[in-house]
Image (cartoon, rainbow, N blue to C red; front, side, top):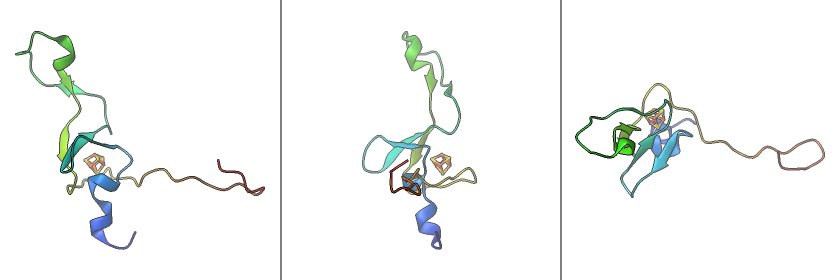
Length: 73
Ligand code: SF4
């Protein structure tokens, strides 16, 4: 990685796309998002981020590695 553009959320292992421009960051567990909804599952959310955002927790996506015998690990 030698271009800052490549360190954006959409290239991060913690990013899960929601649509073409946004997604959720799964770096940390969901945080409390309010109790206005009656559904408990709506009370906790992963942060929504722009696919072009970035932060200091960035890590590149996992990539397959090739073992010494040529197997994908
Ligand atoms: S760069 Fe930061 S905010 Fe973006 S997905 Fe990765 S950990 Fe989350």
